[in-house]
Image 1 (cartoon, helix red, strand yellow):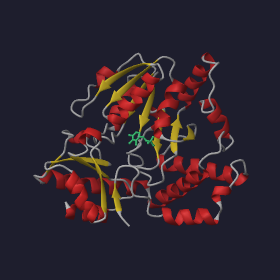
Image 2 (image 1 turned 30 degrees about the horizontal axis):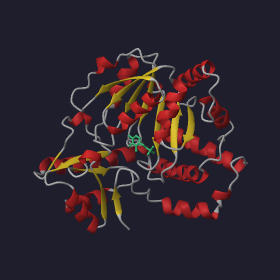
Image 3 (image 1 turned 90 degrees about the vertical axis):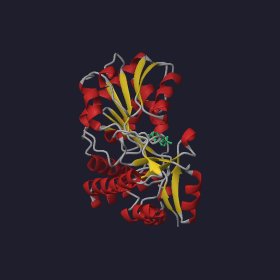
Image 4 (image 1 turned 180 degrees about the vertical axis):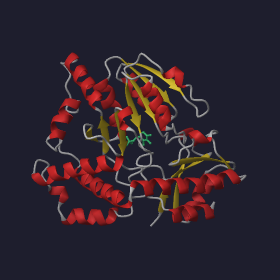
Length: 351
Ligand SMILES: *Cc1c(COP(=O)(O)O)cnc(C)c1O
């Protein structure tokens, strides 16, 4: 078995094999999505996610297919005309482009990891999108910045992409309206399922948008998602298997304790950054420590990353290459709950 430090899909959660076996025994894949057993599963999954991430009771949780879908659903449901996007890398650019593609008047502020000009975010737009952790380049926007943006834009919706920082990142949901993530990164689950957490204010906004736009109705209008979520169901036949595995991994994380997960993440991040800072073969492209991701460590490799990745692979260790143009110059290392301290130590001994 290989050890994956790739940033998504990544190493699977250590207990996943056991849960897959159990799911087969329980015949989860043949379970009716209208039956009581599924409703109980849906209910349990939502409740344990709320417990793990400290999500307020009156926030709704919707299951969609990917974070990519969340970008579109958020724009479709919550924006009449204009949105504002903090663009800090490739994924936030895609969120911005989704809004442009849906014919919204989309504005952006480009953040390169140096100075965060928070005063420029004050905006007339209906929604501000922030990618809390840029998986493409390792730029992290601390939550205090997100809260400040909300504080100076009280009547705007804040959309927050936490795909590659959850469950490490701690979120005060009273200051965020649309939080989303897919599961093949920090949760160590299969791809193809995502979670969107929606505030009451965002649901209200979606209702207004829907009323004004009454010749457009899709099955993933928030009103429809909400009607079904209230019945512990989904409109379509959902990824029941994925939801089952999610519920099990969240239970495992709850018994481990989210605080322990966060402490271990920081411990591993410190090991990694200390090593790269002290080696002349490597450097960290995100200059300011404040904006360096704890969960996606991006490193410049002086001699190029291609041979290094090949060598590590011979030892059964799979790292991420740099993103697109940086493919041959950088490495990206996932520091999710699934990568153990021993895995990190083994990796460092080979670097
Ligand atoms: C991977 C990733 C996405 C896209 O996730 P999909 O599940 O492939 O849609 C979006 N945002 C960030 C920050 C990501 O890392």
